[in-house]
Length: 171
Image (tube, rainbow, N blue to C red; front, top):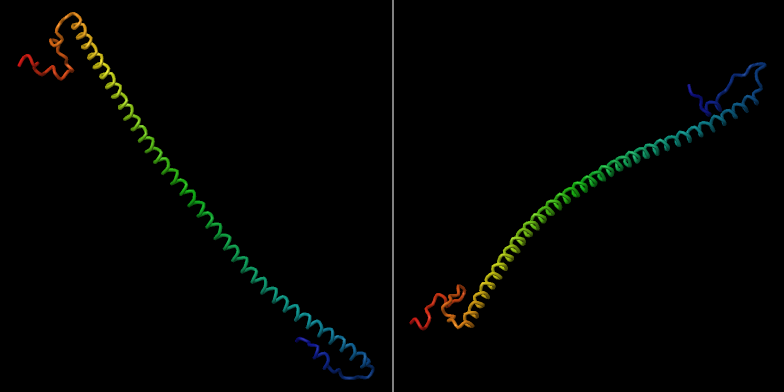
Protein backbone atom coordinates (compact mmCIF):
# COMPACT_ATOMS: atom_id res chain seq x y z
CA UNK A 1 0.00 0.00 0.00
CA UNK A 2 1.29 3.45 -0.97
CA UNK A 3 1.16 6.15 1.64
CA UNK A 4 0.36 9.61 0.34
CA UNK A 5 0.87 12.89 2.20
CA UNK A 6 -2.91 13.12 2.56
CA UNK A 7 -2.97 9.68 4.28
CA UNK A 8 -0.39 10.89 6.75
CA UNK A 9 -2.29 14.09 7.49
CA UNK A 10 -5.57 12.27 8.09
CA UNK A 11 -4.13 9.42 10.06
CA UNK A 12 -5.50 9.36 13.58
CA UNK A 13 -3.96 7.24 16.29
CA UNK A 14 -6.00 6.00 19.23
CA UNK A 15 -5.06 7.60 22.51
CA UNK A 16 -3.81 5.62 25.37
CA UNK A 17 -2.66 6.30 28.76
CA UNK A 18 1.02 6.99 28.88
CA UNK A 19 1.34 7.25 25.11
CA UNK A 20 3.23 9.71 23.04
CA UNK A 21 2.59 13.39 23.33
CA UNK A 22 -0.14 14.02 20.76
CA UNK A 23 1.03 17.51 19.67
CA UNK A 24 4.58 16.34 18.99
CA UNK A 25 3.32 13.32 17.06
CA UNK A 26 0.97 15.54 15.02
CA UNK A 27 3.75 18.04 14.29
CA UNK A 28 6.09 15.26 13.29
CA UNK A 29 3.42 13.74 11.07
CA UNK A 30 2.81 17.17 9.50
CA UNK A 31 6.55 17.52 8.77
CA UNK A 32 6.69 14.03 7.29
CA UNK A 33 3.58 14.77 5.21
CA UNK A 34 5.16 18.00 3.87
CA UNK A 35 8.43 16.22 3.14
CA UNK A 36 6.69 13.36 1.36
CA UNK A 37 4.51 15.83 -0.55
CA UNK A 38 7.62 17.75 -1.59
CA UNK A 39 9.33 14.49 -2.58
CA UNK A 40 6.27 13.36 -4.56
CA UNK A 41 6.20 16.71 -6.41
CA UNK A 42 9.91 16.52 -7.05
CA UNK A 43 9.58 12.91 -8.16
CA UNK A 44 6.72 13.86 -10.50
CA UNK A 45 8.73 16.77 -11.92
CA UNK A 46 11.74 14.49 -12.41
CA UNK A 47 9.55 11.91 -14.14
CA UNK A 48 8.28 14.63 -16.49
CA UNK A 49 11.86 15.71 -17.17
CA UNK A 50 12.89 12.10 -17.79
CA UNK A 51 9.92 11.66 -20.11
CA UNK A 52 10.82 14.87 -21.95
CA UNK A 53 14.48 13.80 -22.16
CA UNK A 54 13.48 10.38 -23.46
CA UNK A 55 11.29 11.99 -26.12
CA UNK A 56 14.14 14.36 -27.00
CA UNK A 57 16.56 11.42 -27.09
CA UNK A 58 14.19 9.52 -29.40
CA UNK A 59 13.99 12.56 -31.67
CA UNK A 60 17.77 12.84 -31.64
CA UNK A 61 18.10 9.14 -32.47
CA UNK A 62 15.71 9.60 -35.37
CA UNK A 63 17.69 12.64 -36.53
CA UNK A 64 20.92 10.67 -36.16
CA UNK A 65 19.47 7.81 -38.21
CA UNK A 66 18.30 10.29 -40.85
CA UNK A 67 21.72 11.95 -40.93
CA UNK A 68 23.43 8.58 -41.13
CA UNK A 69 21.19 7.52 -44.01
CA UNK A 70 21.76 10.86 -45.72
CA UNK A 71 25.52 10.50 -45.27
CA UNK A 72 25.45 6.98 -46.67
CA UNK A 73 23.29 8.12 -49.60
CA UNK A 74 25.63 11.05 -50.23
CA UNK A 75 28.65 8.77 -50.13
CA UNK A 76 26.98 6.34 -52.54
CA UNK A 77 26.05 9.23 -54.83
CA UNK A 78 29.61 10.57 -54.71
CA UNK A 79 30.95 7.09 -55.48
CA UNK A 80 28.58 6.81 -58.43
CA UNK A 81 29.66 10.22 -59.70
CA UNK A 82 33.33 9.24 -59.37
CA UNK A 83 32.69 5.96 -61.18
CA UNK A 84 30.77 7.74 -63.94
CA UNK A 85 33.52 10.34 -64.29
CA UNK A 86 36.16 7.61 -64.42
CA UNK A 87 34.19 5.73 -67.08
CA UNK A 88 33.69 8.92 -69.07
CA UNK A 89 37.39 9.69 -68.85
CA UNK A 90 38.28 6.18 -70.02
CA UNK A 91 35.78 6.45 -72.90
CA UNK A 92 37.12 9.85 -73.93
CA UNK A 93 40.69 8.55 -73.74
CA UNK A 94 39.82 5.53 -75.91
CA UNK A 95 38.04 7.76 -78.41
CA UNK A 96 41.04 10.08 -78.49
CA UNK A 97 43.39 7.13 -79.00
CA UNK A 98 41.21 5.80 -81.84
CA UNK A 99 40.97 9.24 -83.43
CA UNK A 100 44.71 9.75 -82.99
CA UNK A 101 45.35 6.36 -84.61
CA UNK A 102 43.07 7.27 -87.51
CA UNK A 103 44.79 10.63 -87.88
CA UNK A 104 48.21 8.96 -87.81
CA UNK A 105 47.11 6.42 -90.43
CA UNK A 106 45.70 9.23 -92.58
CA UNK A 107 48.93 11.23 -92.17
CA UNK A 108 51.03 8.20 -93.11
CA UNK A 109 48.82 7.58 -96.15
CA UNK A 110 49.18 11.23 -97.19
CA UNK A 111 52.93 11.04 -96.64
CA UNK A 112 53.17 7.94 -98.82
CA UNK A 113 51.05 9.66 -101.50
CA UNK A 114 53.23 12.77 -101.32
CA UNK A 115 56.39 10.68 -101.54
CA UNK A 116 55.00 8.85 -104.59
CA UNK A 117 54.03 12.21 -106.10
CA UNK A 118 57.51 13.57 -105.44
CA UNK A 119 59.07 10.49 -107.01
CA UNK A 120 56.82 10.97 -110.05
CA UNK A 121 57.83 14.62 -110.23
CA UNK A 122 61.52 13.65 -110.02
CA UNK A 123 61.01 11.16 -112.86
CA UNK A 124 59.12 13.74 -114.92
CA UNK A 125 61.88 16.28 -114.23
CA UNK A 126 64.54 13.80 -115.27
CA UNK A 127 62.52 12.96 -118.41
CA UNK A 128 62.01 16.65 -119.19
CA UNK A 129 65.74 17.32 -118.72
CA UNK A 130 66.55 14.41 -121.00
CA UNK A 131 64.15 15.75 -123.65
CA UNK A 132 65.69 19.20 -123.33
CA UNK A 133 69.20 17.70 -123.67
CA UNK A 134 68.06 15.70 -126.69
CA UNK A 135 66.50 18.81 -128.23
CA UNK A 136 69.66 20.81 -127.54
CA UNK A 137 71.81 18.09 -129.14
CA UNK A 138 69.55 18.10 -132.16
CA UNK A 139 69.83 21.88 -132.48
CA UNK A 140 73.59 21.60 -131.96
CA UNK A 141 73.83 19.10 -134.83
CA UNK A 142 71.69 21.36 -136.98
CA UNK A 143 74.01 24.26 -136.23
CA UNK A 144 77.04 22.14 -137.05
CA UNK A 145 75.49 21.07 -140.32
CA UNK A 146 74.59 24.63 -141.14
CA UNK A 147 78.14 25.68 -140.49
CA UNK A 148 79.45 22.85 -142.67
CA UNK A 149 77.12 23.84 -145.46
CA UNK A 150 74.81 20.93 -145.24
CA UNK A 151 71.07 21.00 -145.55
CA UNK A 152 69.36 21.04 -142.19
CA UNK A 153 66.16 19.65 -143.60
CA UNK A 154 67.65 16.26 -144.08
CA UNK A 155 67.79 15.72 -140.37
CA UNK A 156 64.66 14.46 -138.77
CA UNK A 157 63.72 15.78 -135.37
CA UNK A 158 61.83 13.25 -133.32
CA UNK A 159 60.33 16.02 -131.24
CA UNK A 160 59.53 18.41 -134.07
CA UNK A 161 56.00 18.26 -135.42
CA UNK A 162 57.34 18.64 -138.97
CA UNK A 163 59.17 15.35 -138.84
CA UNK A 164 56.09 13.39 -139.86
CA UNK A 165 54.90 15.91 -142.50
CA UNK A 166 56.16 15.99 -146.01
CA UNK A 167 58.24 19.01 -146.88
CA UNK A 168 56.86 21.61 -149.33
CA UNK A 169 59.47 20.63 -151.92
CA UNK A 170 58.17 17.02 -151.92
CA UNK A 171 54.73 18.10 -152.99
